[in-house]
Length: 218
Image (tube, rainbow, N blue to C red; front, side):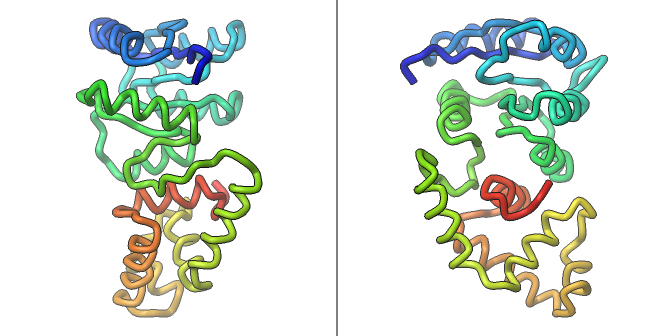
């Protein structure tokens, strides 16, 4: 990363935003090029400015919060990389954010080291998530090899289970067992098998894994 990485901050708390800006500009070759109080200001300004390499966006804001901002970006600027800053731990919200295209999320209390890792992971490999299988995505050939190996390691039933887990219908594991016509224990077995194979620990991790490797459509 020899070139300076341009970053936009979107957060209604000025003191927090100022602290994040100061931290960002000392931990790496990063430059905060613009700041906004909320998603509405950001989305109005974006068409008139050079797109940043990364936007760091608060989840809870007036006027237009992080979810609304991501819905706008999904429709109008789907290629923009976004990290969400949040105190939110609700699984459904986090999964919805990934479906809308965020590249990772961080607690506002994160350390400088973690913030730097998140920025680096998003800029270099596309995503930041502690449970995501870390693979160097440096060429199309390597990408194809990774996808081939993933498919080789998954059975047809595990793939079906993964598709249902990632469905926007938000099926429970009990409902998935009914759809697949198997016992809940069997469904748990599919889940644990995928967890072990790909070093994943949660439903959020499964969804992000599937999105990143284009195993499901979102």
